[in-house]
Image 1: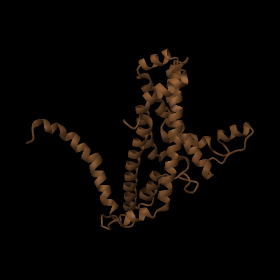
Image 2 (image 1 turned 180 degrees about the horizontal axis):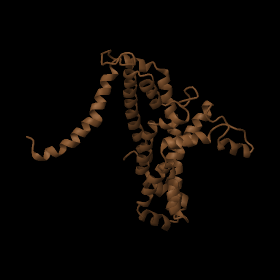
Image 3 (image 1 turned 120 degrees about the horizontal axis):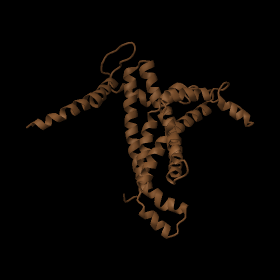
Image 4 (image 1 turned 90 degrees about the vertical axis):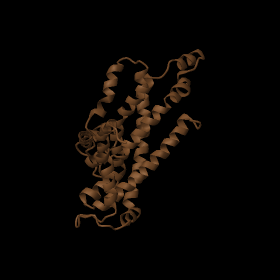
Length: 288
């Protein structure tokens, strides 16, 4: 029997339905239709769109590209973020200035930042090639060569999101207990041994959380790709999010893009669950 207190849950329940359940159920329904630019409607075509997804080489190539991009960027962000957090945590001179300086990239709007980096990587006018030329190196076709365009996207992602890792890991370092470090000092442990046997194990739960959050964010990368390379040259920097945007909002194949989105959602849920278990076993231990 409903009581008065249950009605206080009604706003949250309605918000949940409006924000999550309705769009998800509607997307599922659309994915079983042939809704496109020529005929908008919720007719029923069964699993034809999902069969098309399985044969879509461009989608699976973008998924493999995203895997490599996420692996490179999140690894670099974690290593650099951890190093910067350790540097500030060790009470270096001017640490308050560095705390603010390291966070500046994260405060920049991704689209604005991507426009600035596209200018920096401009092959004839950008300062990146001027610096390489001044160092005696050859100019690089940053945005017109497939490999260098991919490298450019990696550089921008690392530059913008390393501060996020730095912030989370610094918060974790500040909250660590002092007793293990006193015990390590009494035992005469070197700084390197103290890091690997005390700091790194204690930081494992925070590291797992930071890495998972960054993988989730990296899986949604689109704004940087859209502004810097538009997925090019060819499809060299195309990610699943950008490809779904092309099919859904540029080609207006709404039914097919809904099937792509659901397939991508299921793949990401399974992958993130597997990665979380793998990281927990590797960083925290099998018993945990």
